[in-house]
Image (cartoon, rainbow, N blue to C red; front, side, top):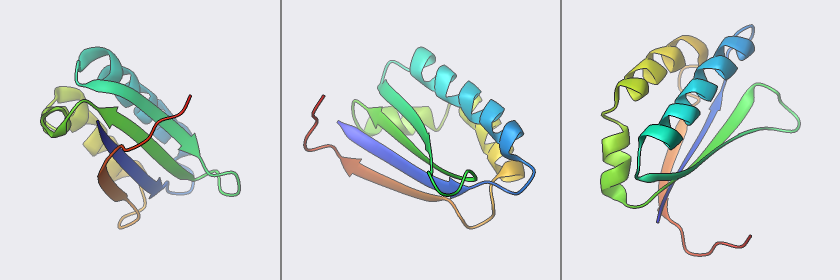
Length: 100
């Protein structure tokens, strides 16, 4: 499994529009992409404009396919409008352990 972790800050006054955009993105990714097996969105407990996404994919090809979808292009446009420039950090890792 491949985990994509994204952390970012949202511009002041953009939180609600950002939440609408990331909700649509997470739903489309999870329902429309067979290679996506999970998409979590979390907010920092001390800063309600700081978010972390944890996306889980079957393999690297699924991550690359994700980045070519129409909903990803819409998301990138929304992110450009609502995310603080330079604040987004993406990390791609291999998931080693999972406990439920």
